[in-house]
Image (cartoon, rainbow, N blue to C red):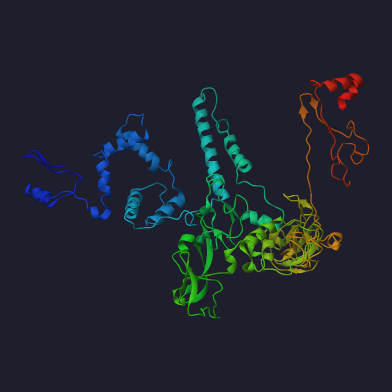
Length: 621
């Protein structure tokens, strides 16, 4: 407030608008300088805020904040300052992270070279300015579903967070032990102080019980590859199925080239679990990038730039199928392009980038569907999901109608064995291939080891191994002795592959015709020859475990002597009570015989009658 000491009256009150009369009175008092606030900048928001604020200096403001945060404690300026520092300005207690600093600097147009991981005065000032502009209708709000606002948290980051929790627990335990340690009686050693169980328990819990730690889908090579490229919005720190609305699940323009708009589950997880697009990659900050070809003065160059969703919005991007001549110039006078989620028609010299391929829009599984552009989206979704359910057949057969992605999927899923370096095949057997520089085996060695330094490459094949889905993993050699090999050549086929190409099914002749109503609606008829020739026969390897425990009544026993069973039921069991190798079994056959000690329990009336008639023999019934 401005006081007139002679009159003892208030000339002008703080935070009140100044009229011409007040200005004249202040001038008559002889005041040279006073502080005023220009309310046209922020519509008087700061004035209204200060009017409500009861504090007049820094110390009072600190105490007021402390009272609100710690209602029961007596406020002092020192405590309040320490608390505020701990909350936002202490690197040990508060961490924005690299991504947090990057996004704050980007959003508020601050210095991008600043690597501080805590809040600074500049951040608070810039944030206040941004909020004031929003109140005036300037600036833009963030779209929560835009991929510039969503990031991928990789397994390394999730595991690092768990390790941080485990290390904090270990630190607390060490400090407790140090306080209890009697230095006079014993010497202090790291082994006595540090107990790693807290850390190992957290890591085991993460891999064993986390919602995102899943058993790998290993039905076929495509299922394995797709599972590794899956993105989930569920899990710790994410959404829940019940609360996720339509907006989160829906396809967004920023998904283009980053997340597949087709491949997603059909059930309650639709839109929450997605698949990485064919050429997309995750950058250091966790944002998904997709490649584009640089366009300079209307000419498409060979330079590839990976752009995040928010960077892409600054550019005009042409489609991959826009016609260009041999020199890379656009042939049409107008080019259909994308810009900020809309389609626009522009002259070639305004184009900044061009898509690398029409395939970059979809995921690997959707990219394997021939003539995808003629397919209905719902059926394409079903097709991309159903390909992952195909079991490896006895004899694989590559498709007659393919998309060109088959060999890439087979290699990248590691289903086939590829040569590391060029050479000549020196030795081939059912379970290994040896390639050397000159095609000769090293002399004087009984066991030949993998030795890239001396140009000896030993490739061991996986034979009749069980996958996670109980399908059969079997690799077959494709090369012969003396054959010259280039780096990257396929030397052995795996499950569901033929000659290094993905082969999930068979090429069969189909007819669309009625057959006495047997193929009504979605029913199909198959020829007897398909069954007889084992066209769709597959091998499955099932594994059964049985455990013999020590119980309170005595140990369980694995034995062939099982009471109340005839010899016919036990004919395939060995002397140890386990089924013999090579025995052919049917559903319900006994694989392992086990007897468990039984306790004498309170018998029912009919059981007591049986016991009275037959004696102890009735106990086994």
